[in-house]
Length: 141
Image 1 (tube, rainbow, N blue to C red):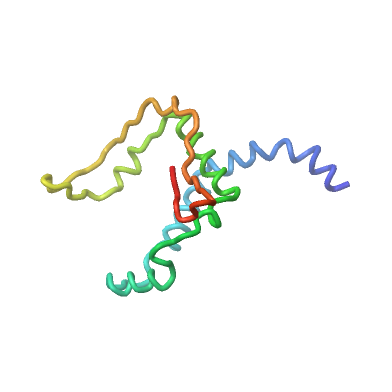
Image 2: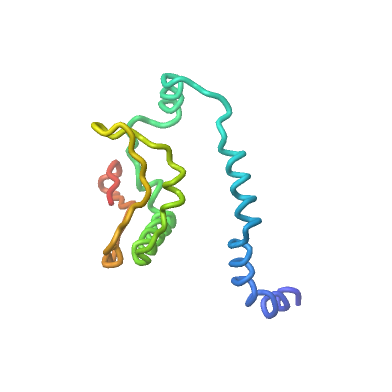
């Protein structure tokens, strides 16, 4: 009875409630605060120690991409990329304004303010994580 009640009364209201929750300023601020707290560096390491710890955890040459990407992850990533391409509209100014300037020889200091792309809505099928079981060490786009 509870399931029937939920399905008939609350289920139709869920998409709108989720949209309002995800779009609220309080949730955005909570997520930003949690991300800032979780992603802050714990301690600094030198480059050699960082390289050594990566080499110990990840092989230098990975040879079995299908074991990672031949699942629902590939379809999800392809759908996200295709959806992004079809929308053909992104506002990157706020994110780019937070980026520090960087050197691009021979220019000493470059600040990105806006990146514009057009025509991406004409891309009909873009696969990002393409694997081949006969060549498991290859990963294509």
